[in-house]
Image (cartoon, rainbow, N blue to C red; front, side):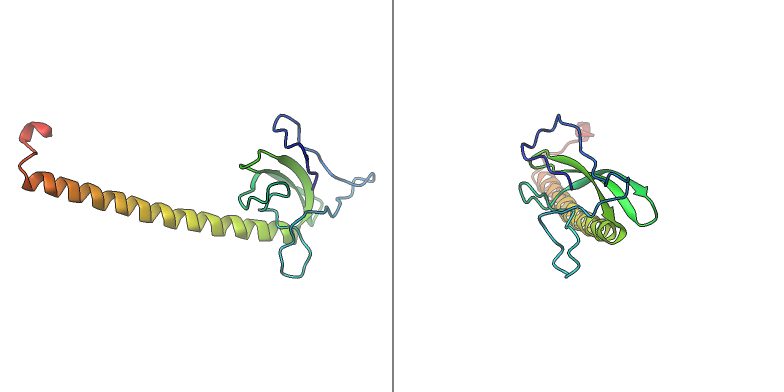
Amino acid sequence: MAHDTEHNPEQAPQDLAAPSGEPLSTPWPHADGDGTGDPALWRCGGCDCPFVQPLDWDLVGRSHWRVTLRCPNCEWVGTGVFSQDAVDRFDRELDRGMRKLQGTLSRVSRACMEADIAHFAQALESDLIVPFDF
């Protein structure tokens, strides 16, 4: 993956390919840890933030993807060509993160609703709510 060491968000992403146009197996500082050596695309190579997001991805050939990534922490943006396996792992990690966010949202929404109900019940008991409140 091309990596802009100065983290300039205004700089255009860089594409990586061999002179023949073939996709490159691009180095990335973080391997998945599963022995494949494929990059952990969700982890920023600059600041180590685990929340890298895809901005765009397009199929290149039959088994590689050109992916533009952005780190929300340091604003790094880069584009590289990655194997189907690496992109599949990234997609699974994005799905896992989405499920985690949805679970957190559900818990926070429920806690807020319970607090609202408790406050409303207390106001009713204290005769602080009158018909013109509605």
